[in-house]
Image (cartoon, rainbow over all chains, first blue to last red; front, top):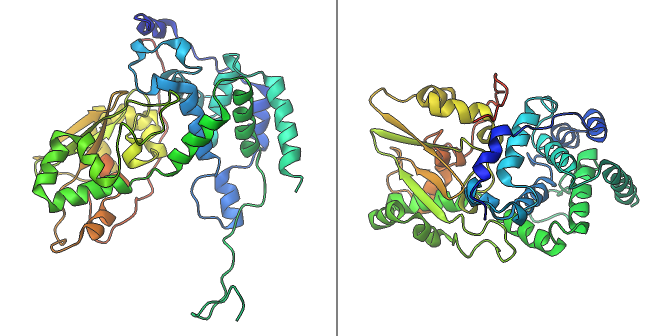
Length: 137
Length: 240
């Protein structure tokens, strides 16, 4: 447990430099509000929203429930307060025009890439694989 | 009569579905798969936690309020010990979440804020978006926005008016700021016109927005209004 986490916020800067893969998704991806209207689906949220929430929770581990200055940073990949701070900042800057929850998803991927938890190229490759798999039926 | 035709004489069509995979759906799956492969969490933990999150919604909190309106002893328990009172509506803050793998395990301090004719409570999380999910489900978009979080604490009466809740000057407004340890729900006043109602009838009018405190229950109103999502004017700074 660290007693000095509260000092980290003093010079905490969110890296809002655009990431080209995520920019492409932002430009070309179709939002749930558009798809659900087109197909006559009444669910206000896309089916992937729950799994996205789970991913965020599991990356945050117990930082959801401990005061920030008590969080052992080694115990969680992405502390909840830092993720939410980054999401807020990204939502008001480069992802300003993206609706929720697509915005939350882009912000999460952005934070993970900037932190080195994911690599942009491997994410692009995995998306290509998944697209083929999803559309192979 | 076909299999899809029942006694009431019409044909059921299958529910519509989105027959298109969006880039966002693919991105969500790709992030999740890579995180699992890198050992950031396990596939099994993700499955178990997702199943749990799927079960959450505002109904238990609505039922807690309805029960308290009908039972003064239970109302007292709600005020004194929200965690204990939650058990009567099927929520155990300690054991309901499948927490064996280090996910939010001890956010188990629930406070029930009881409104009176002269006191109105409303809930916010100024830091991020802490919310009593085990008893109220997922937070709405507007609750997460910096605009709501910043302005509610400065101008609670005016922000509530924007939500359509005009309070007389002699009603005190009290804002509760959620945090990692303590989550809140509001117990609004039981509205007039509900004499003789059952717990089920009462629970129907205790909407999510009533439980956050930005609306009050009204007979006939059983769903949340569309809320404006406003952007913040000033950029986010974290220099404190």
